[in-house]
Amino acid sequence: MWPLRLLVSTLLLCSWLPLAAQAPADSDPKQRIRTARELAKQGSGAIPKLQPMLSDPLVEVRIEAVKAIVEIGTGASLDPLIQATRDSDAEVDIRATDGLVNFYLPGYVRTGLSASLRRIGNVFTAKLTDTNDQVIDPFVEVRPEVVAALGRLASSAATLEARANAARACGILRGRSALPDLYLALHSKDSQLIYECLVAIRKIGDRSAAPQIAFLLHDLDEKVQLTVIETTGLLQNRDALPDLRRVLSDPASNKIRRAALGAIAMIPDETSRPDYLRYFADKDDGMRAAAAEGLARLKNPSDLPLLRKAFNEERKMSPRLSQAFALVMLGQSDLGELSPLRYLVNTLNSVAWRGVARPFLVELARDPAIRRTLQNAVPSAAKAEKIELADILARSGDKDTLACLEALSRDPDTEVAEAGLNASRILKARLP
Image (cartoon, rainbow, N blue to C red; front, side):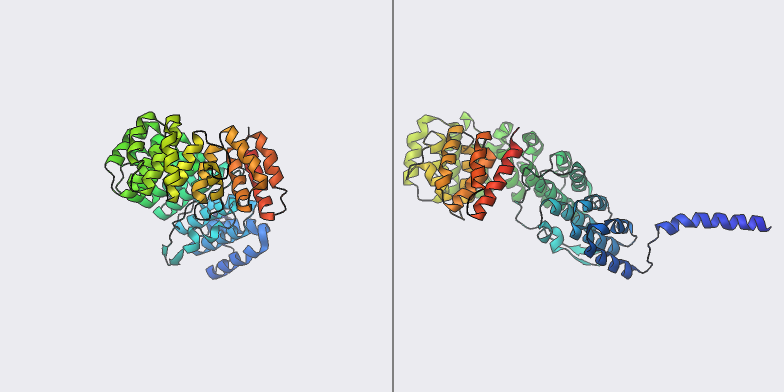
């Protein structure tokens, strides 16, 4: 009997050992939470001790573990954070998402969704900020596994908050490989998630995405409709022109009307000329601006007298900048004191309006002759102009632009030098 009893006892012990190995080292949950917090202070060397805590049966421990890994924030944090995106708890997913973005965009966790997250028991509240313009520089390389994890969350996370947050992250990291997941998420009934997916698609900037968003052009949510209209224009979906014209002819609001004409203006097509001429003298500033932009991209010299007269008589900043852009597109590209190109460059000194002038100059600088004119203007430009021109030339320059940007990186003003250095890196990442 004793050998049999000994055999049974041995078998029972062996079956218990794997369970014991999986159990937390400390049976006191509060102590495990304290341990996670203490480990955060030890740096990346503590990652091997924190990673097993991501499998803890208590969500509070997993939350503290992911917070600690995010705080450490080194390259060693990425694999554990990818693991954490598979958690069944939305807060863990959200914190892991923000941590992944924070590695590539330092400081993001202070403004991301996890910064506003408040939890009471199983219920938490969090709100994405209205500002959604952050994006990493083109020279920053993101691990494919990170984008894959975020894309999966955007299309299939357990909560809408976690999905919307992941969609925003895909856009910030320019996650092109996440596009299929974003397309799936667009078919959600949640407007916030749809909006975040559209902005992400716009930031990624792949024109092949345009047909995937066209079904939303008549969406009933104004925020969604505005975003899809603007994105359609930026992606230059020519096939969407009939739909955009239908929206223009029967808009739900003045905002939609302006956006529709603005999107049409982004897609050069002579059949749109009647729309531009119809709204060229409209009482609405935004409509006049969009009409001028449309004529600009048609590049018809016969429009010069009309545009020159409007530019000289216009008193509102937005349409006047658009008219200046049009005049430069049609050949008035000198930098004389009262020239339209000088007007655009001078506007880079204005905090309120540089965001309008900058994309015009990015587009204009794709023309080699205009780009050379801007490069030659850099040495004598004002400080704000130098900083802005560095970014503009980085996005539209070629190999001949590098010398100009490298000279800026040696500017005596440290802010200008930093802008020049960053611009050089962006341009080098763009060049073949």
